[in-house]
Amino acid sequence: MNAVASLNPPEFQQYVAAFQAIDNLKDTHVQILQIHYHAHEKTITAKILAQAMGYSHHTTAK
Image (spheres, rainbow, N blue to C red):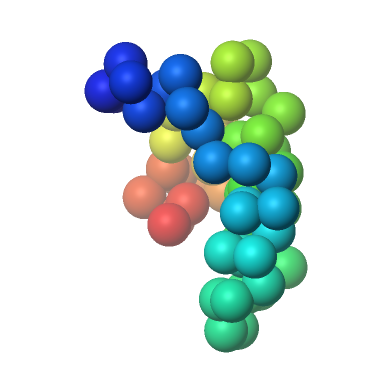
């Protein structure tokens, strides 16, 4: 990850506006975002994300 980008994350309202602009944001997408947000240091592997979502394999967590 680019060190400069990690030091200057978007503001909260920029995130809100970006997600509100997405058409057809499904409940599962919101759940994935919430799990990712609550992950340690906001970082999560596909395998752990899939497990948290109740999927049997990480390829279904897209």
